[in-house]
Amino acid sequence: MLTAVDEDDSPVRVLVVDDEAGVRSALRRGLAAEGMEVTACAEGAEALRLGSTGAFDVILLDALLPGESGYRVLERLRERGTTTPVLMVASGEDDLDRADGSAPEADGYVVRPFSVVALAGRVRALVRGSGTPGEGDVLRVGALEIDRAGRKVRWAGEPIALSPREYKLLLALAGRPGTVLAEEDLLREVWGADQDVTSDVVEVYIGYLRRKLDAVGAGELVRTVEGRGYRVGEA
Image (cartoon, rainbow, N blue to C red):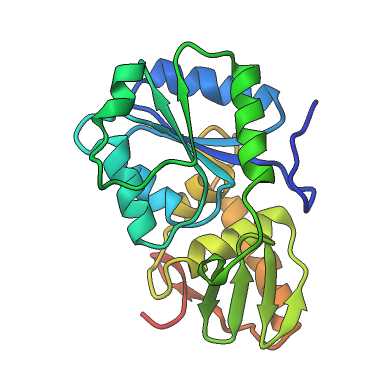
């Protein structure tokens, strides 16, 4: 199967945000056929939670979500320091004029109808043009340092080689230090709701991750909270 990869040879990861189940399903299938890893959600609060993890290369965001609009979600993502490129999707040109003039600009706009092949091309272009990492692209938790643009991890300056899945797992946890994430949350964020895997895989990958962290003296970084899940840092 064709696989779209970024510079570190990991698949391009896309968060699709749309309130229509049919649209989510079609985009998930179409972009997956283009070799991308796709996670989908239906509303603004979930988009904000997932988008803030930094685990995605591009966020495909419906402009007219019910309740909290896509423009407001974008504004809140930028307020949180999330620099992930956002491609705003509108049903017509008029929808693009509904943004508050004070709202931040999306990184790109696309108007329905469009072909999935063309959309995938826009996504790849945003990934290629995401630029050199700046201070806002580096996540630090104690001695842990994650370069989100370069997808590189260091502990006290020493590099840690992680697989793409291990990296996403660590990023999901470190992106919210002190917050306990249940296995179900991690499964959804790291593997995606459409993946045919069980929560047991989270425990397996936590073990992989801990062994690599332990090798550089960071074995206590990821902690188990009995009966609840996992966290990075103090509660």
